[in-house]
Image (tube, rainbow, N blue to C red):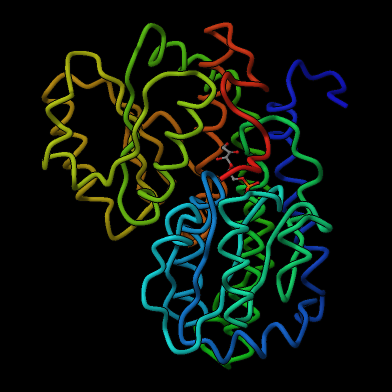
Length: 359
Ligand code: F6R
């Protein structure tokens, strides 16, 4: 039930610290061991490439996971849209392993890929919030997201849960391979930081509500920009905004602006810039200056490590690899308040269904 909440979406945003703790308790033991099926790790160790297949928000969680698996488990990763991949399958690697990311476990676009993967007798894992779902039953292995039922059409806690479970699995795989990078990645500590960091952001709701009114009232377009991990995040931030506020929003790699998109910047165009990615930070600062010079109204969401005076939202300490778990939360809240201000049906946006069971 919604309890005292007016909308499921806000309730689900607020639940995210608990979801992080639940994932940690379920998968990570105090002695450092992990509750992951040994057969799953054995199978994944044989893989020369992981193919993450998903749609929408889950696809965006896959883009974040790609980086984590490559860094922590030293395996190349492709992230694929089910609707594209199934019918335009590229030449696969010699020993592929498939990961299906799906909150509902029912997404038809992903399922048609799984049917083909099974015909080819290739190994697969479904990460889902619904343990007895179709994708869960038909894959070789399953991992639960443990986010609890997600009712609002706009996915929030499933996205952060997917990133957390990807991080857990990457750690386990890297440890199974005996990798130093995996030893250094303290996933238990990181999930604790994630829980605390999300809490800090949700406690700043009123500030974010005011920023939303300041930046997005009467605006038709908005842009999210970032580099590296923040680029992946920008895609999700923009999707959240467009699907419930109906503001036209795009997520861009900050470096791509000057290759075309910057032509759209006018006096007062909202540009929300993420600065959590260390390698990209100084270049993104340059891009912020470029759009400001053309009239953009810039809101900066920066990690405390790279924050500068004037940045409006500060992201508490966390490993960059999983930083979207915290830094997506301001975008979820911005979307929520923008939708609310427009009088939209926040939990049931027009034209959308919670689970998309047609291709
Ligand atoms: C956006 C949203 C959708 C879903 C997509 C995949 O907020 O919820 O983009 O992420 O339809 O759904 P699942 O994860 O159930 O496969």
